[in-house]
Image (tube, rainbow, N blue to C red):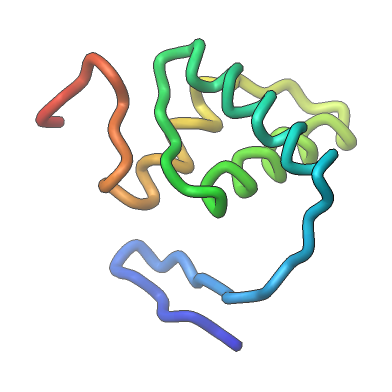
Length: 88
């Protein structure tokens, strides 16, 4: 089922996925790394999008900046905060 496109032109697709406990543990590890860099991603869907971005860069032998990945995911929805930058 297709989701709505928001003002920024990001098309969201709603799908149901099944994750194993191992998958969730890996996501928790990614969340710890992102949190250690000062970012707080509140939802699993955003965390999964960050993980997909990191995985895509890795398999394509591209460099990535964990801060840029986190900020991109966070900026797609302004409800998530970047610690230390309140009110921006």
